[in-house]
Length: 189
Image (tube, rainbow, N blue to C red):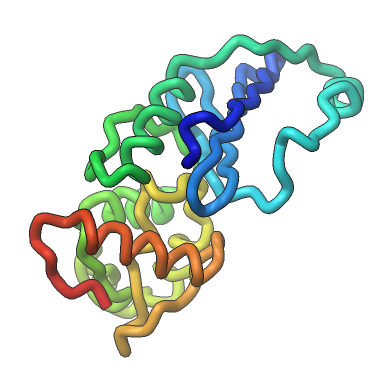
């Protein structure tokens, strides 16, 4: 599957940011971390292995290295376990930047149990902001850490799949994957 795939790493030394490309059943993901924790993890349509590191380092005037940040090692292991159906929760430190409202939304997303879904309306009520449905949806869309901050578990009020930066086909796959690996065997959507 994806275990034997080559891991590509680039470290932006001057910015204290490490990047990793992780092969998954849904395509490549790019993860980024600082010493504080994972700061992003998103699906990437352009494989990092095709990336021109020399041009990148010259453009940004940075050095590159093959040293892997320990948070990214953990990220790769835990994502592999998630896709194998063995991991339901992540234990990696997260260091994302955003507004206070975005942080509240992203924290609330992490409380949606594995194998379940929640509507945007339920999400806004849980934050005691029932009229902030659109703002909530926008904050979900700005989520920089796919899967670990599980915005894929949020669906429309009508029960339909809606809005996912990685594509609705990935959202559907993730929800079915969780349903198939969930001890509750509950209905997701």
